[in-house]
Image (cartoon, rainbow over the protein chains, first blue to last red):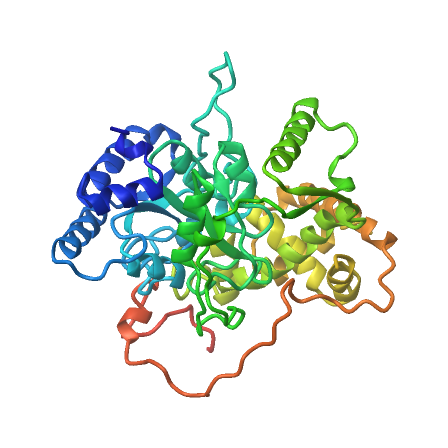
Length: 387
Length: 95
């Protein structure tokens, strides 16, 4: 039989249904894997007791013939950017160390309601600002993979680096990520797993620590495309508590996999083949195109002329929104606090001690571009530049 | 436009982040580099283009203006660094 940690979500679902394994078996195997792989630093908080309780509750539901959720008994990891009731949520920042939310984010709540088992909270770049998981207050995450003939550690990508390492390293069957400017897709690529950023509005942002609200979106990180469809189905849904949540029925994503990519028209943007691209990457790109064609997709050469302006626009829009969102960390209502002689000094000392270098830099850039005299030039222009 | 040392002091004050004296020049350099690099956006002709607020075409919904929860003071203040008598506390602001 397949090792329990090698199951896909779809296989685990079938094995639970047939009675070949219990949710407790799955939870215990993954708790052991999580504990054995602490060198990866993929988790900020492990919740083994919660996982076993969730698993036992799932097994009990199944034994009694009660209605089961789409992810009943499936062990998952939750990025430590989703608020989880009664479980510390840090955004990998010193300023939120010790913060225990009195509420549950809609996405993690949906996964709970679907019967899933929570193994713990995964590491990330501080406030999701980074692409290598090296800005976490709780230390770097290691990629479970190594180069051929070279044992030096590799970064897992970021910001959802802990989630990507945990899925890739067989520490969970799937994980939630969030993506503002690549934070699901890039670590998924670095760790050799599946990650997708859903259409904005598909997953509720309520209860997710905000970075750049007009771009933030939660999504699934799994080892197969089918698992991504299953997990996304459990995360998605209209939420009146998020004013930008899409009020549309959630389709059966897994059923939509039938027929594969046959007949799909896939655009190949000329601008994505940049000058001086590493030949290894260029070969992978060509391999990807060949796979799509073999599977029956039609490739169409297209041009996205504004591609080169995407990153500079992002470098303004994201920090500007972050500087506003992160204003709430004031040392008064929750989180870390440093004393000061007066209120302003309390704020300044708290925020200096609580934010890491990268977060501080982005808040300053954002504050600069939003400050008097620069708003039109530096904030409105980027929003006109990327149609 | 280059960001100078005085601008960093002003922006840090606006952002309520204390920046040590020794970091000012480094930050001025880093911020100047980022702003300088972003200025390539000036090449794009944006005349007549409306600023985009979302990639999805959506209208913000209205909701009834009514109380949906309450009476949870202790949960609200549970994470406060220095709660006093069920309230958040700050240094004295009025003499």
